[in-house]
Length: 53
Image 1: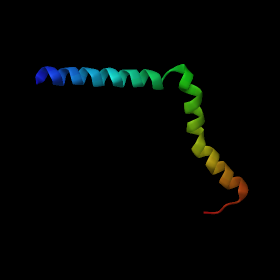
Image 2: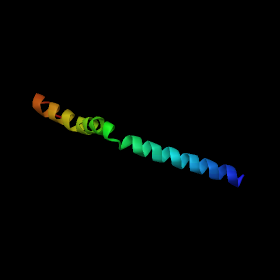
Image 3: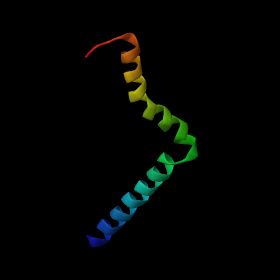
């Protein structure tokens, strides 16, 4: 049972590292920059239209 847990732990760790490299790849940088700007664009649209909250 310990061997199975060790293999599962290693597989999940490898999946985590692969996901980390995918997320931080230079190809994804523009997508993340656009997503990071979304909350700011929403606030700017509300201010320019005179929407009071």
